[in-house]
Length: 163
Image (cartoon, rainbow, N blue to C red):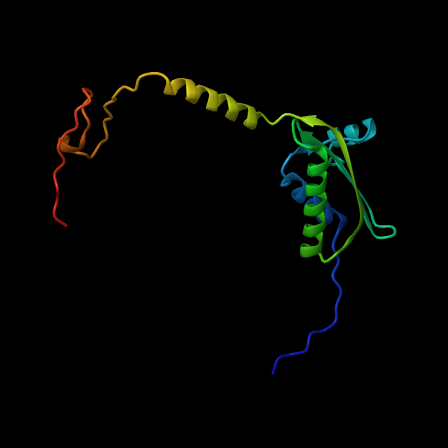
């Protein structure tokens, strides 16, 4: 016979909530990072006492102030909606707490170098496609002469093996 559950209580620390919120915000598309709202917060972060971007209060429910940077070229309102949805879902599913209010402050635009590098790589690939293709011989250890491709562009006959 199964035992009846005993009523209990669980405690979630502020740090755990901040870590959940931080993960949800950083995984949102279009967010490049957090920013500091004031010089005092920047100084305390530099010393190592604080982490940037999240202010949490529990008076009158869970209230969050988030200070983020949005990727250049992204629609700010859409990124803010995505962040709001991700934070509310994460806290509801992991901790079981509903958020009373979330205020998202966009303190700047950040540059995502991976997107820029990707655009340059695509531009280089398209210019390389205009060049003539050359056959290249590749030496692979363990293959016999019948499987190698010669540099002249001719293909070598392949042997069929019995299995």
